[in-house]
Image (cartoon, rainbow, N blue to C red; front, side, top):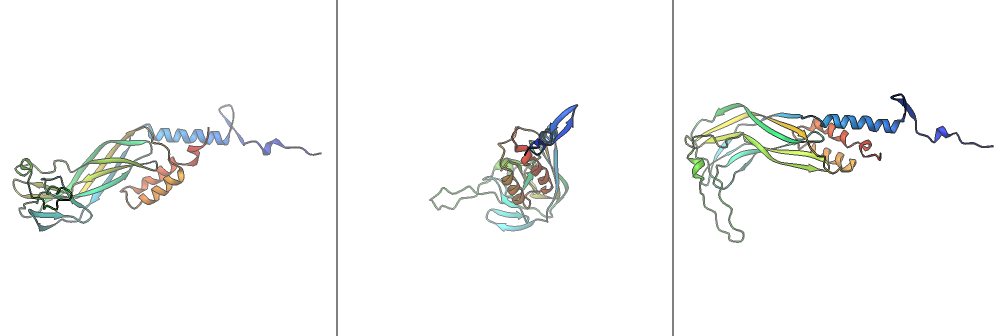
Length: 238
């Protein structure tokens, strides 16, 4: 005679709230509580950035200020200044609510400088060399330019991972005096708030994206939280 012992074909049941529940369902509940609890309140991402001293060199239309690791960009007619593009991981289920960029140490570079303006782009196919025109409102001002030392450039999602791109300005220019202000240390603070979750990407793609981003983002330590939110348990059928 043969028989079947059903305990080998049933999921393990554990006591829960006066009854019983399968271990798989209990794990899903705990994971949901963890994920919802993590996204139910605002979070803060902060990073202190350091910059090497700037170099000043002659350029068409004036002088150019450069800093290693920074791009020298501006809108046409504005002073060309170094800009650092900082990329941050955002907590799972969160998006940017506010960005605060605070210079911690600022000094005036010795001397007076005529910072070159960004030339306009030449029309495609013309080959004409663009002329240098200055934004008169900026170049006549006694206020530092830019007025803010950083701002959110964009917020993007890659394979289910939210990213914030922040433009940081280590230098500011006072046109009326030719003074260049340099901040060797700047703190970036990103305040986040709960946001609708993007379409869930396969866990393997999310993990692969996080590995690629470790050497790019300013806060790679947050990748562990992002990886946990993409756990296969979160994608399991109910």
